[in-house]
Amino acid sequence: MSGICDGRVVVVTGAGRGLGRAHALAFAAEGARVVVNDLGVGLDGTPGPDSPAAAVVAEIRAAGGEAVAHGADIATTDGAASLVRTALTTYGRLDTLVNNAGFLRDRMLVNLDEDDWDAVLRVHLKGHFLPLKHAAAHWRAEAKAGRTPAARIVNTSSGAGLLGSVGQGNYSAAKAAIVALTLVAAAELARYNVQVNAIAPAARTRMTEHTFADTMTAPAAGFDTMAPDNVSPLVVWLGSTAGTGVTGRVFETEGGRITVMEGWHPGPTAQQGQRWTPAGAGEAVRKLLAQAATPGAVYGT
Image (cartoon, rainbow, N blue to C red; front, side):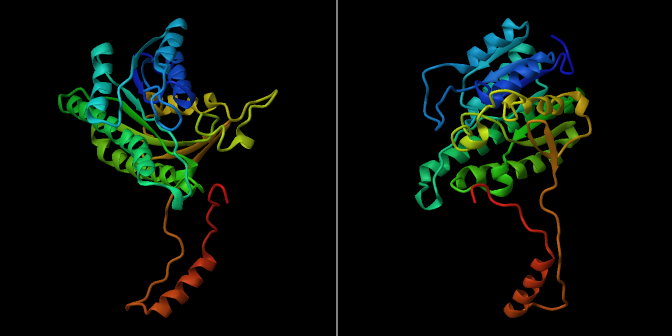
C-alpha cells in the first residue's frame, strides 16, 4: 500500500466506527501506519461489549497495511499520553493526529443536566485538547532537537458548532470551542512546523443517522452523499505533506463538496468619539443590522 502518506504514522481517535474508521482506512490505503483509538462505547458514551478498534486494525492488515489498536480514554492525561506513546513505541514516530472521538447526549437546554453537559464537553473538547497537547509536546521536543517535524493535526468540529443546533447545546458548545482551539493551536505550534486545521463534516454515523434520519438515509442507487468515506480524502490530504502551507483553516465537507469556512469577521461598524447612551447604542445597532448579512439558520429551526 502506497500513496501520499508513505512513511507517515497517523493516530485517529474514535476510529472504531463511522468517520474515524473511514479516516483510518483511508490513511492506511495511502501508505500510513495507523494507531486506531477507540473505547468501544455506546452512542451515549457508556461502555460497550465489543472492540471496534481491533476490528479496524484487522481490516487494515488484511488489506496489506500496518495498524495497531489503542483502547485507552483519550480524555484523560494518562490515556492521551499513552496514545502518543503507542505510536512512538510501535512505529518510532508520530506525524499526524486526527481528533475525531465523540458521542451525543442530546437534550433541550431546560432538560439538559450537568452530567450530560460535562460528559459531552469532556469527550469532545478535552478529548481534543489532551491528545493535541501531548502530540505537540513531542513535536516541540523534536524541533528543539533539530529534527523539525512535518506534523499535522486535524480536528473535528461540526455545523452545529458553526451555526448551533436545537437540542444540542452541549455538543454545539464543544464543537464551537474546538474551532477556537484549532486557531490557537495553529498560531502557537507553527514555530515547530505543526499545521492545525479543522473539518466540519456532514456524514452518516451513529451520531447522525437517527438525529437527522431524513437526510442521512443511504440511497438505493447512485452516489451516497452522506457516506463517511466521502469526508476522509480531505482529512488524508490535510494530514499529509501535500497540504504544506495550509493551517488555521476550517473546512465544511460532505459528499463531493468542500467549503472553506470564513468564520467571524468584522461587519458593519458604527463609531463615535464619545460614550454611547443606551438609546443611542440601540439606534446604531438597528442601523447596523439593516446593513449586515443574515446569519445562517440554526440547525433544527
